[in-house]
Length: 219
Image 1: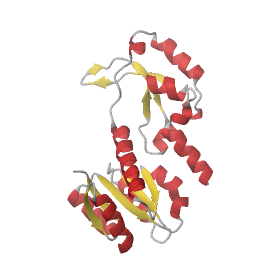
Image 2: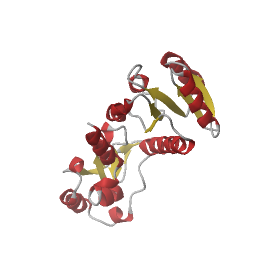
Image 3: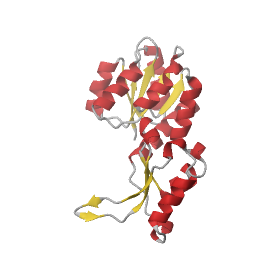
């Protein structure tokens, strides 16, 4: 069962969140950040739900600690007291989902699902090389994709990637390293079909572009 750690300094909010999480997950609770960090080491949760308000700012403090200590656990941030203005900062620090308190079961479950899925996608390995890449001149394909690029973050960023694995060089393929995706804690590298369909097709489908637009709107 998925292990969820709830960190919140307000006992009534913490209890309410634990009740929501307890219907589907194994739950542990921490009443402040120091206790939460101890529980992370002890219980090794699969997901963390942390409160963030203007007084304590525990969400940002937790995410900075996790970044500095290279802890790869998805985080859902629960805003209260109008703390939603911190969302752009928390996105950059790596939070995977957000909810505003009070929150019902449906919205809580959606946030947990989004955080777990986003975490899996961030740390997934590259997809198999596509048939189109295998049957094409990669230099021509690289040039075409750079010409067709629609996303501002992908301009002239398509290249041919090959890596040394176990003493042998991998088969070359099309890749793009996106600084915008990296900024929002997403996997920096995307590959041919994503580049073709999203970066060169419809950038609004990219989660990093969606987060960037949301951050601009809330600024």
